[in-house]
Length: 149
Image 1 (tube, rainbow, N blue to C red):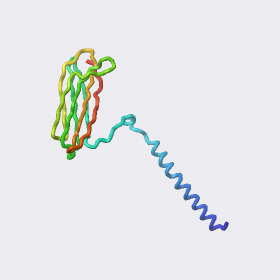
Image 2: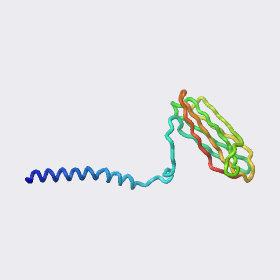
Image 3: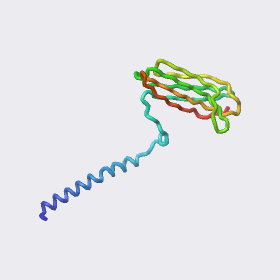
Image 4: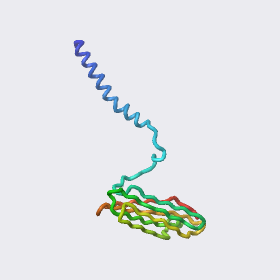
């Protein structure tokens, strides 16, 4: 092999090695970036029409306050509905004790209500939101934290 061919072969081999290692180095750098602890275990589905749905329960004495809302994508959502269910824990299951609904021809809907609860019982709120864009819709269900009266 003459020296010109050796140089060409060496250059090709060096170039191939650089190209082969570049993705591995890039992936290693990406894998070593810190993960946000708040979103590490969260699974969040991609929603087309729903921007956010919240379900909050607070209890003071024997009064539960239910605060649920849904926001659709402004300019796209044509109707919004939220159904809030106050649930009490019975053993390992949940029973709905009261339901409130708000439906609006808008991009948002909300429920804010008070309800008398039993001391010592554990409660949560199940919020089911539906948002429409014309005849198309999507639904999302979220739960509040559990609270004991």
